[in-house]
Each structure stands twice: as structure tokens, then as C-alpha cells.
Image (cartoon, rainbow, N blue to C red; front, side, top):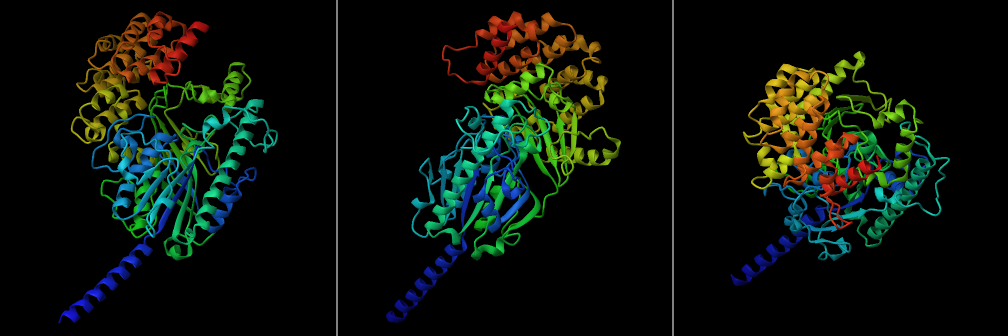
Length: 606
């Protein structure tokens, strides 16, 4: 009897080990190679000027995605999407380098892989735009690698390549591989010497990035792991010359994405090696897709959907994107893309495209573009960047890949415009877009709750807020006046903002706006002051903005300086108050400090 029991145990043990081995083999290794700040300036995408042999070869061995998009045209909000499978404008993480908390239920997705037996490594950029969750990684450092896992353990490994980052064009190279005189330049850029040079230098940096991709792939092959590893190559958003990174066009949102499936996982691929797919995918889909490929259950809270694996969802009809504050400059933009058209909704159209951002202006090409504008050397397409935005933009991407011909007012495209507009509104309502909350209010809310929870509470009447914002489009001044006295400070903020956008029609609302300079919400005070300035109440406007500069709220100070910057010499009475924000530390790069430095420089020069 005892002998039978021992034999039975041995059989059970053998079956257990055998099953465990099979299960482990069925879990693919997954490798992410992530480059920074580049659009599909890749040979495999048809760019004959690019030198990218390694990515081109990867595309021959894998599947190229023609319609892959970042959810934001800048790194930290994009990476917030990638790590959570959630839209940042649903969590309150849409503003650049903000650290607002997210609910405990929203976990960085590598944690689920780790719990399923994967070794998770990140080398090494995080930049997730919220409070970190370091426990999601077995290792996250500049030496992190799948090589440090236990023998036979499946891995999810990320390698970030920063050589193509925006900063790569801030310093001029001694010698270029790509000829500035032969480089192709988008029609919205002037062919200044600096512009041509920066474009050529950027192609050099993409070439260097490609060589690093090759090194990572070679290392994987030499380790004997290529046959068990699904490889993703993609960029964290578009870039990098002005009007790409940070901006809601194809140049800022369209990314390269190539996925290679080894022979043993070919059944998971959407096509044969060397094929292309026009399926729409966005960063919100990446986390659920990796979980699906790994055989890990996708959490129900995730807003993305898997586009590969057993949990693959239906193909999405639209790719959604957003823009919030970019460094020291406030903005709010949403965009919807289908396979042919891009729709853009500018919620703060009075703010010009080319708001000065210190880091962006470090590029010689950007400074030369601005110089040419003030010298009146630009054509209409090139000069448009330095003007106010329309409420809506619509582009036929197939016919107009550079997005320069706005079709929003063309009667032939009314049906397309209405369809895309509705898609945008439906999406914002579905995810409970928190972007209508001024960031000065967000900063205060974050002390008591998460912005996600606030957005999903009764305290955030999104339909009512969107109705107020819709009045902006229709110039419903009676509705705007009623909203100026709303009990909700968010509604009051947008009503006051509408008075700036429609300043010619807002004269009758001066008295209402004056009352709001004493509003309990500083964001409303500032919005009212901006409107009053344009209604010739300049002294009261500047006094209100000076008071806001002393607020114990960084984003209120940023908002006030943003408005003061547009007043030119009329902002002079606030100069000393702005100077008071400048610290002794010259390296201090807080956003209110950056904005203050620029304003002081501007006022003292003039």
C-alpha cells in the first residue's frame, strides 16, 4: 500500500512539473523597445530619407501598424496611459509632470504580470505623471534587464532609448550624416538654415536610435531568447521639431509601432511576417494587450481593450487623444482620429498655438521660426502657428498628412464634422473627463480625494459643464450670463472664459464679471480678470491678477502669469510681484518660476 502511494506521488509530481513546464512555455516573454519623441520617420513607413535598417528589418519579420497613436503628444501623460491602461484625463494625470494621486484600485499593470510569475524590468525611464508604484517592477534602473530573472522565468522587459529625445537638437553637432539641403521639411515650417539643420540632425539621432534597437535585438538573439519573445518597438509620442511634440496633429500623435512574433507565437499575430495592418490602436490599449498575450485577466477598470491575444476586443472605430497643460502653459484640447480624418476641439481657442514654452524654445529651429514670423517672412500656412486657434479643426489625413487644410467650416464635410464631434463628446462623457476642472482647483482637490473619484462623484456635473462649454460655440450670451452666477465654480470658470473668447459680445456682462473678481475660487477670479481686461477694465484686471500671484497654489500662480503674459506692457504694474516669485536658485524649474522668468524678461526688454 505504501509503495503504491509513493508511486502515485511520483506520478503526480511528474505531471505537476510537466504541466508547470508547459504553462511556463506558453507564457511568452514580452519585450518593449521604446524610443523617445519620434514620429514614423522610419524607412519601413516610407521615409526614404531615414536611415533605419534595424527597424526596417524588424518590420520585415513582424507586423507594422499603420494607425497607432499616442493618447498625448508628450511623454509623461503618454506614459501615464501606458502604465495604467486608463485615459489620464479620466484620472487627472493629463497635465505635464503633475503628481496627482490615483485610486488604489488602479495598479501599474506590470504588477499583474509579476503576480502571474513574470520577471518585470524597466530600463529605466518611468515618468508616469502620478505617485510611483515601485513594487510593480522586480527591477527598475539603468542596469535593469531580463537577464537578472530566475532561470526559465518568463519576463516583461522595457528598454527606453532617449537618444532621439527633443533635447537632441538643442546642441549642434559637429558633423551630420544627413544633408540639411536635402532634408524634406513640412509645409508649415520655413526653410531657415536652423530649421534645415535641426531636421537633418534629428534624422541623425533617429539613425543612432535605430542602431541601439539593433543592439537590443542582437543581445536578445545571442541570449537564445528571440524564439520565445514577442517584441514591440514604438515611440512614446511624435516629434520632435516645433508643432509636433506637444501638439495635436499627426506629427505629435502618430507613432511607429512594429510587433514581431516568433514562430511559436505566430498564431497570436494579426498577419504574416512583413505584413501591415490598418487597425486603430492607442496607448490605452497597450496594457490590456500585454496582459492578454500573457494570459493574465484584464482588470475591469481598464479603459483600453486588447488588440492581441485571447482577450482581444473588437476593433475600435476611433483613437482619442488629449492635451492639457504643457509645462508652464495652460491649454485644453481633445482629438478624435478615425482611419481617414482627424478632428480637434480647442476648448481655449484664444490661447495661440505658439505659447512660449522655455524648453521648446531651446531648439534653434523654433527660435528661427519665431524670428521669421516677426520679420514678416512667413507664408500663410507657416504664420498660422503664431495665431489664435479655431474652436474646431478637421483634416483629411489621407489627402493632407501635415494637417494644414482645416475642413471644419467646409459644408462638404458637415456630416463628417458632426460625426467626429459627437464621438469626442461621447468619449468625454463616457470616461468622465476631468479636464474641465481648472488645475488650480485640482491642486486643492488632490489634498482630500483623488481626481478620478471626484470625476465619478455627484460633485462633478459633467453634462452641465459641457452644456456651458457648448454655449461658447453658439455664443449663447444669455446662457453664459446665467452660468456666471452658477453655484458650481467650474461652471463659473468656463462662463468667465467664454467672455474672453467672445469679448466683442460680452460687454453687457461686465458687472457680473466684476463680482467674480471676489469669487471664492482663485481660478474663477483669474478667468474673470482676463475677460475684464478685454472689456477695458484693465486696472481691475491687473489688480486681480497681482493678488492671484500671492496665492498659496502653484497652478493659480501659473494661470495668473499666463494671462499677464498676453497683456504686454499693460502687465508692467505687476512686474515687481512677478519678480518676487523668482528664487535665488537659478536652477529652480518650477512651472510658476519658468513662467515668471519669461514674463520678467519680456517686460524688462519692452
